[in-house]
Length: 268
Image (cartoon, rainbow, N blue to C red; front, top):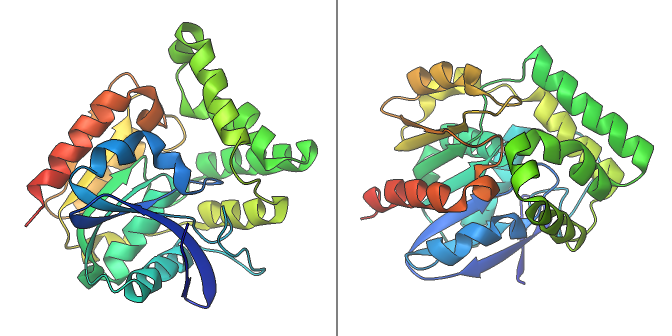
């Protein structure tokens, strides 16, 4: 996969498809492959650029504090290095928080914005959950196993665990097959989640915006929906009724269908 210098780090990315550029930003602890179930559909109509963010995958993992604003600076620099003037931007969870900052700080770079399982600023509940993941990662000594044992249950409904245990196991095997994130890099990334606060940035976003939540998500629940929708002018809200934090895996067909429908309206 190609690598490029952006914002003083070397960033890894993968490019597939043809059409207007669509930038896909991963969630906490994930690399570009996290959108494997989406790229096959998206690449039929868009040039999909899936990135490894700072601290994950094969992108550099420098020391020092990370923030969602810094991740956005990285992405803006990446787009410039790739010669892309404007892109459709989509992200889930940490990726969405990054996209939120990107659209607010670099509006000229963002043609449309898809915010999945996003949040305005971290509240005491979200901070407590992520601190628990940090404690578990330290105890297990493995970010990968912490993701499977500690984060998965927040991402999927109990009904999915009961109905499709083999699918959950396959997702775990998929995670184990990806590059292992060092513990310190995870702690820096997760500190960025804990410190996220973009509430004051919402009014600066001008791109057409789709906001989605899983109905059964607890981490970034619909408690954030009203502030986001009212803060981002003209935004539209979609609720995935049968899903938790990760509808991109829990209901792939519905997620891809509704997100593609939005993206298609923004082409041209």
